[in-house]
View: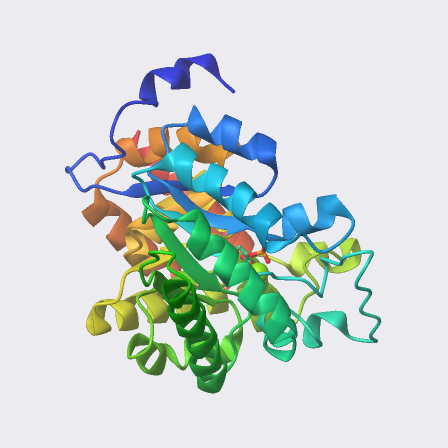
Length: 324
Ligand code: PEP
Ligand code: MG
């Protein structure tokens, strides 16, 4: 970390014209909690719960999960912690639960797996709920959502877990539930999701992969994997406009949020909640604090008219330099 940035830890992330931006962290490993604690984050925008599942070598019990989740909730309390339900498949596999497919990124991934295994899903949700007793800063987020019925089925499981625990005498409250927007179909279903959930969060890593049909981890096509591609930016703009119209809180938790150029673009498109690796948080805060959101809006709408991601990046870079 650049030591000069430490002075920003306790400062609000406010743009030059006084607009408040929520900067949150993405967590996974236990060590991320310690690092994130010192970054002055406004909460956790994405806790990748599959990480502890990968570390353990077997499915963790409800008790074991509750302990892990409790430490996240306690560390950040009263700030919110957004826990994503298990997102395995694709590039994230569990040795003890192998998934072998020709097309893993288009196969059994994320919510598709847990909806087919409600016993895994409900144990995880129960553990999250139990961990949040007395703290109530838990939000639950669903990954790889493709269809409305998946959200309805997931909500049913979550409500069942709340009901069961209350029956057992555990005083859990219904948490906010949100969906990730990271599959192209979801971009077109914002209005429908808005009637069902409390918030949405864009997964720009997968959204880029699926919009551009480019494997996010294949070095051979890495030069065409770019979240600043005009099609991705147009999708990001449409998502924020529809969420604003539906009055649903929106954040973005992909790598784009932790890239200073990406963060400025997102500010200009209308994003007010960004979640990133803690290593990038203060650098992004430093940049956003120097920027006027009206200026960012003008620049970003100009970027939407350009056709090449490299030109988009250099145009933004130049605009930032000119603005000093
Ligand atoms: C994303 O897809 O942008 C995201 C945040 O989730 P993950 O990188 O864990 O797939
Ligand atoms: Mg994803």
